[in-house]
Amino acid sequence: MDFFMTGEIAPLFVRWSLPHWAALGIVALAAGGLLWGCRRLRMESRLLVGKVLGSFFLLTFLMETFGRIVREHWEPWQDRLPLHFCSLMALVCFIALWFRTPWACAVAYFGVLTASVQGLITPMLHDGFPSVAFFAFFIGHGLLLISALYLPAVLQWRARPWDDMRALGLCDAYLVCIIPVNIWLDTNYGFTRYAPAGTVLEYFGPAPWYFLTLQIPALALLRLLYLTVRVRKK
Image 1 (cartoon, rainbow, N blue to C red):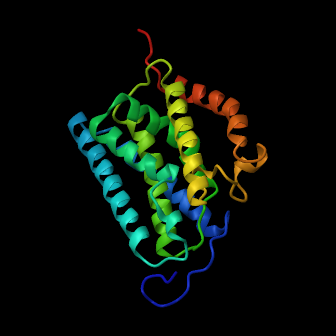
Image 2: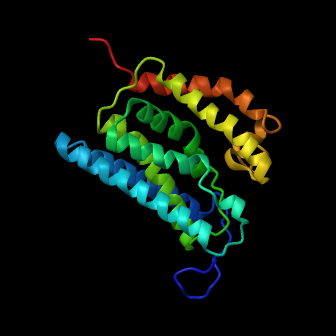
Image 3: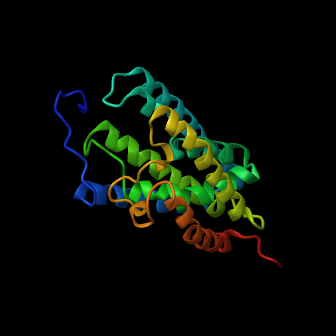
């Protein structure tokens, strides 16, 4: 992929390289700075900033979906559909930030902090810095992380009892629905057919059964996350 319209070829992405560490550091600083600053705003301004973030998610989702479908690309068309988990999480974050629907807030918080954050740790990227794909990936996944933290830290959203289990159930429903789609299209949305190299899924058995093995650590992690945002009794 060429970058900045110069005709040069971007280098391949390498995990845990200096650009990867730099991107993670920038995401962490941006998240901390935005959350710290917005917590000092009045609630009306906090809601407005949240809606701006949500609008950005919707806009980028539409632009990325349209761009991946119509442009020439090294991927076959079946792999360019907006069926990746993080693509759907962008829509969920839009609903959560705009309408603060309880189920959307729960799925955005628990889904991003247990699944989508893995994208930052073990990115599925072909082109490295300074390609457009590199910036788009880390900006998109970084904003997912910021939005998930924005709900409890800034908008003061609190989880209802068993919201973590409901969120896990919806994520599992996505996997169940996407398996026949992957078989039909010969794709790997949700990584139900094979685990990407270097990801945590490789340590939990063969696909798609590693999702069954992951239920136990997922339940423990979700319960810990729930304890940080549960409604506290007076």
